[in-house]
Image (cartoon, rainbow, N blue to C red; front, side):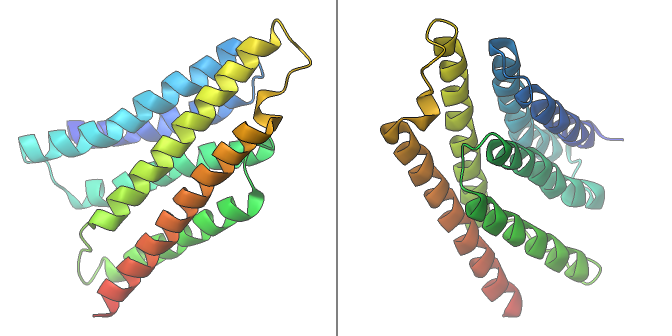
Length: 187
């Protein structure tokens, strides 16, 4: 198995560890989730770089890479829903798009490969930024609650507005990239 595919598989494992760490409402748990998420997000860059640099582009890598992205990002977003940090409907929309695109790619893959599009990469970046900001807010909230247990940072109106705006941006980018890909495939 190539190094780039090993990095992709590591991202899937790290995704599970992020979800597990987010279930721990301790500062260590939240810091672990943030660190693991950032490390997993970096493997998304590294596996592509390694594959191009070493000529390790493969059908397995093309299949595993988007699955690993979805594991990481959907795992984080559904964990945020469970923590009552993000709106459920937005995560449902994001999940529906990801499932639809994955099904479309799987149906088309035997006939021809669908290269990654700029809008899809921008969507992934928006999702990563949103998740990292939310994870940072959860870390800060957990840290603050050690001295002020009555203070729920993510419940504060400015913070709720920031999270809602980031999620709205991410949801819009996700829908746009899905529609853009669908239009390209239909052509």
